[in-house]
Image (cartoon, rainbow, N blue to C red; front, side, top):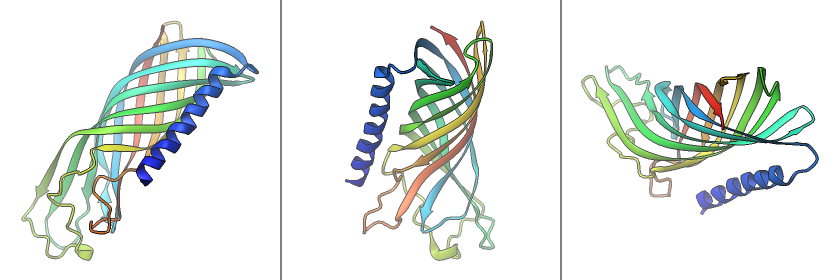
Length: 231
């Protein structure tokens, strides 16, 4: 029920922004559409309760981007953006129990973020800074785990071992994401760089009273580049 409510709230907020952007008459209207590719690297973790000590897990991300700029309100350039990306997530544990054990879980996702895009700067032949923010949904297409060393879980801190050999139960993921970036607009297209953070609201395992974890949600920080062509 909480998951469904969160999705409804996120969808309603974004739908409200789309409606306001499409119907607003106070600014100077635009109809600038662009399409292109994006890619980069991300660091990911999974927020566990009870806590599991982790290192950052690195993985690539790449996909396609569509953007529609619909209005300029004073100095603020307003629009929407949607992407479809392939991303690698997961977690790498810091096992400090005197063993040589290593553990990494790698998960592969198709991600679809829906952004409100707000920019400041030159629209053509110049630089523009921008903010992207909005909801994101994703679906896990596969995963794998790696165990290293002479495997022995008897001395794990807090005896947290329920994650091992436990396949992801909830392949559908959702949350909120935001990014800050800089673009160079030229006659040949738009080249941009962005730092982005994703905060997961869904959980990869069950979190009912009979389950071990009370929270197990994804979070990622990524650095990415994109190149867009005007349509």
